Length: 529
Image (cartoon, rainbow, N blue to C red):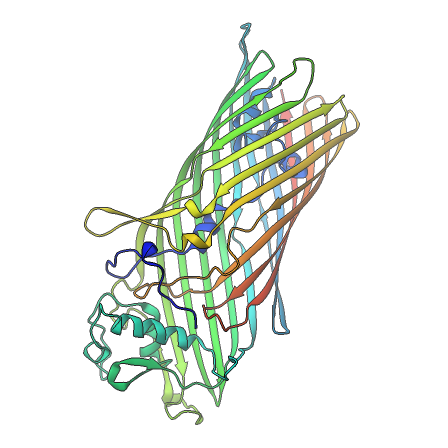
C-alpha cells in the first residue's frame, strides 16, 4: 500500500483533530467553468480582446470599455451532467439535470467628451461560475493484489489507526480504548481509524501494537451526490482612451455553497457488509481583483491585444462534517454474520473531539494571467484567441491553530501543476441582424498522474475518495439576433473530460475510469439603449 506519510516539508503541526483540506477541495473550488452570456459562451469565451460583452468583465475588465451605449441582459440555462464509470468492466451511468440562471448584468456607458478619455463605463454582472450538481455511482468486485491480498477500506482504517497509536506521538491503543464502553479519551485521533475500530472493520492485534482486518474479498458500491455552486458578482469600471487604449478594473465577490453526501458499501458475502457514509457542507464567501487593458497597435486596424491579471480569490469558508459507520461482520472469520454482529457508530457516540465537526478556514486560489488577441474583418467576422495560465501548486489553506495564530498549509502541493487554458472563438454575421458563433477550449490537467488524497493520521476527513481529472475539452456554438434595441442569443456548450477515481487510496487498487459529459443550453435576452 502507498505510504501515508508526506515529506516533512509538507507536514502541518498537529493541533487537535487536523482540519486539513485536500488538494481536491482546492482544485474543486478554484477551477471555474466557462459561463456567462449565450454570446460569450457561444464564442468559447475568447472575447478578452474583442470586448463589448457583459461577461468580458470577468475575464478582461477592459472589455467593458468598448461599450458606447447602455446594455442590460438576463440569461436562462438548462444543464445536464452525465458521469460514466467503468471499473474492471462494471459500468454505470448517472445523470443530473438542472435549470439555472447563468447570468444577469448591465452596463452604463457615459460619453465624457474629452479629447483623451472618450467613455467611462460602469457595469455589474452575476454569473454562475461553478456548478457542483452531479451524481456518481461506481461498483464491482474489488481486485486482489498480485500476492492475493484482499484490498478493502479496512486497510486504510487500520493504517491510520496504527500510525496514530504507534507512530511515536500517541499512546498504545490498549490505553485508549475501553472495550466495554468505547470512549476515546485521546482527542487527537483520526476519525477513519476510530470509526473503523469501533465499527468492527478492524481489530487490534499483538496487544494493541497494530490493527488488521480478516475480511473476504469485497464487492464495492460507491455513490455520491453533490449539490450547490459558486455565484460570482462582478463590479466593473472601465474607460476608453482615444479608441485605442481601453482599461478596466473588476472587483469580484463570490458566494460558495457546496453539499456532498458519499456512501461506500463493501459486501463481503456470508451476510457480511461494511458501510461508511459522510455528509459534508461548505459555505463561505470570497473576493478578488481583476485588472485589464486592451490596445490597438495600429490606429487604422481593428486588431487588438488584451492583457489581464486576476489576483487570487481569498475565500473564508466554514465546513460541517458528520459520518456514520454500520457493519455486520462475523468476528469468527468467514462464518455467517447475524444481527448480533451488527454495529453502528458515529463520532458523537465515540466522544470524538469535534463530532458534528464545524470549523473555519481560508483558501487562497492561484493568480491568473490572461493574454488575448481579437480581430474584426469588415462587419461580418470577429475572431478571438486567448491563453491563460494558473499555477495550482501555489494554492494554500490557512487555519487558526487554536492559539490565535494562523497556520499556512499546502497539502500535497507537489501533486498540483500549472494549468494552461487556450480559448478560440469566432462570430460570423450571415446578415447584419443574424450571427453564427463557434468556439473551443482546451485546459490541461491540474493533477500529476500519481496524485492521491493524503489523509493525515489524525484527520477528521472520512469522505476520502478522489478523482484525478485529466485534460478538459469544451466545444461551443451559438446563434444570435440583434435588432435596433432588443437582442436574443442562443448558446450551446459541451464539456468532456476523463478521470481516474478511487474510493480510498491504495496503490494496488485499480482506478475506476470516469468520463464526464456536461451539456448546457443558454438563452440570453437583452436591450441596448
